[in-house]
Amino acid sequence: MNQPALKKYPVGIQTFSKIREGDYLYIDKTEYVYRMTHTNSVYMFLSRPRRFGKSLLTSTLHAYFEGRKELFEGLAVEKLETEWTQYPVLHFDMSLGKHMDKDALTRYLHNLLQNNEIRLGIAAREAQDTNIRLTNLIMDAYAKYGRQVVVLIDEYDAPVLDVVHEDRDLPALRNVMRNFYSPLKACDPYLRYVFLTGITKFSQLSIFSELNNIQNISMTKEYAAICGITEEEMRTQMDADLDVFADKLDTTKENLLDKLKSYYDGYHFTWPSPDIYNPYSLMNAFGEGELNSYWFGSGTPTYLIEMLRKYQVAPQQIGGRKVRQENFDVPIERMTNVTPLLYQSGYLTIKDYAAFAQLYTLDIPNREVRLGLMSNLIQNYVPDTEPVGTLLGLMAEQLHNDNMDEALHFLQTFLSTVPYTDNTDYEGHYQQVLYIIFSLMGYYVDVEVHTATGRVDVVMRTAHTLYIIEVKLNKSAAEAMQQIDLKHYDERFALCGLPVVKVGVNFDSERHTIREWTIDNGINGSLL
Image 1: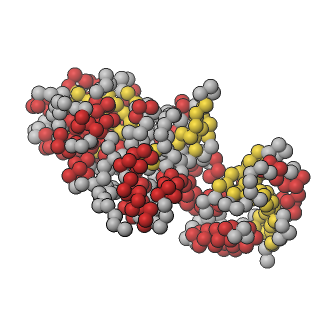
Image 2: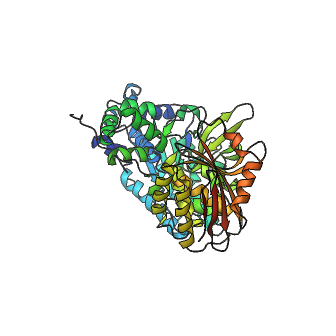
Image 3: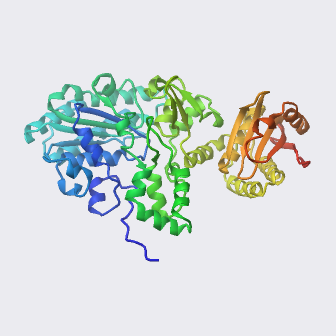
């Protein structure tokens, strides 16, 4: 069939003018731009995960405040704006200010200031301190153009984010940034609008300690969908794209939507909120015509893995958290556990809210993030991760055919050949290994599942079967199965709608693999 002509997908493009002039697909967010700039608040802050559209939103604000009306033809703001006043705009992109010491960071800030001076045609006044130079720039721009100045700061926290887990470098870098941002309050009479984006909140950066009138719109319901793509936006603004994509995968549009939802949907930054799709992953998926791990594959921040280690968070402990807002929407420097970082970085999102208890349920957003997390965490359990992909394929094939016995044979062989890792002398280590392996295969898996008589070590569900798995270390598979039977664990899942299969597994701490297992269909396996 003849396919309609589609716009190009703006993969990696974060400049509004380039998208509009290059006839790329643009999901219209300009109604939000008008709303943001026509409130009583002059200072606004938005937190969203990386690659979630913050830079594009900032660029859109830049074009709007420069009065570039031609770029907004056909968009929502065209019907709302009547004046299109031109303001001098200072635009600071902090995303490249990473992995620097304080001297390099100071030079980087001077370079950003110089770029803005050149763009606005303002002669630089001699100033060694970045805050003085920024003050001069704001006042000189105000004097030259006769209008208040707009300041846009994108990824304000980038220079300090990668050292948030360190005590050595963070204070010095934080002081450099605090000094740079300090003029924003003093220059208030000269400012029309100030907008800052970032991933996290830092309590001791001056934008939060001094700008006490800054409006944080990160969890404001009216801005819930300001970044990302909603299903309604996809169905209306990408309807033809869905048809083409479905044809590529030889499936129906509704089946494709189900897959896209499973992989890339599920984000909520307030409650209630529409489902938000990851825009970076979605654009890549449509552009490539494949469902892959794009957001996570674009780079896992070092600080995330380091903080999970620092707070000793086991893989199965990442999701399923019930917390109050003050326990996750807090400045990173005040956090006492890893929850705020996981939420603000996009690895957890809001899944529910109990108004009476004022408790939010935070969980992993979708399949892409879950698989990405497990892929990174498995190296803590299996140092040589290269053969893992083959193992997952072999095990998945067997479990698809309800052959748990052969799947455990593959896992046993694999574990017996990988290098030794530390901390393998407790049952929880092997429970975590099973959790990660089953998660990487895309199955539902949970650990320490409560029943009326105890807790099941591992519950795993495939399309056809629910498995109850009891793990022992240096004991016997028979003891594991006996515990399942004595405590009647299977009764807890009698109404699940799937056949329930009981599995007892015994690991060997000396050989670091499965010694033996027994399955309630009479199949037994052991280490040769």
